[in-house]
Image (cartoon, rainbow, N blue to C red; front, top):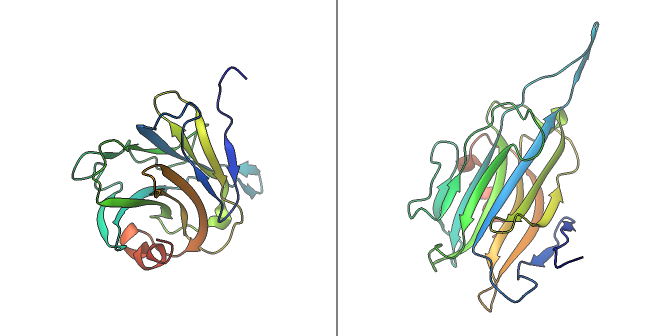
Length: 197
């Protein structure tokens, strides 16, 4: 396979090491989120609708306290190590609809976990969303490291997708969470997110 890394498809609760195959360490990773709106069936055929999901990255310390948050109203962490590339308000198009870049090398040592959550700011629930996923990509090589498909539609309007954490040896791991929640902003999701930190 010429050294190409094969992505790991995660299941809920599964943890995977993000160590590079060659023994090197990751420097910058990209968390990508994608989704499609369920087409509404009407009298004159199906019609596309627009769904505005918002991805947020919540930075926690070893005590489980929130230190910083990156979301559509604050696109960069205070130290600049985490950056949201912008709000996609429709979910239209292929691939990642929203992305958050994390410079692991610049991340302050006090940050031990980053939780990635998604919420519907407009309040639409996940019964109107399909093909939702999150994936972690090595930004340097473009290799997809891990992917988690968000299964199950329902009346919830948010989901705690995954977390990236520092391992004991200083390496990084990704854990698929996939917990349903209710909340339009990361602030409303904090109690549910804290339960997984």
